[in-house]
Length: 202
Image (cartoon, rainbow, N blue to C red; front, top):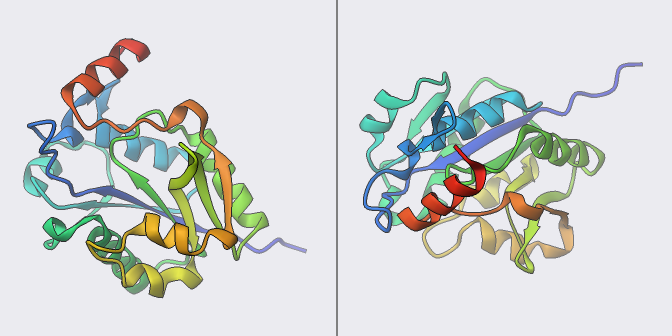
């Protein structure tokens, strides 16, 4: 008997203006591509079934400089907060002609996330299809995180005041936390980027 397929769609959030960086961090060089390109490569190398990248600030510039093939969605309300990008991406996925049981939300500035880690999240999601599977770090849970499709309505209600991390807090009794170890390190400033480059010798 065939086991039921567990399709996971990836939503990469890449809409920010990178104000602390002073330039679009999505396009900073990383390995053989850019930060955003690397995250797209990572998502596509995982067992996820679809990958969507949500853009906002500098959307045209980013699209013209990303060589990886991916579906781009422009969030015209990106200035209203990260939650609006999650909402826009969720709405697109629900309207698209694709099958998925969960949405894996990633950030464009977490280049240490690897396909093996995403596959671990996906495997645990398959074992716990009604649970949110989140990354555990700094005594809290965050993204990358997989939200079962039943949370779509909640994701559609996110805004600048109520983002995905608040949904994780609200649903903490229904969250499976997976240690992310060294993989979680956001890049917000040029110093963050330079330190990470030196550490990873790229």
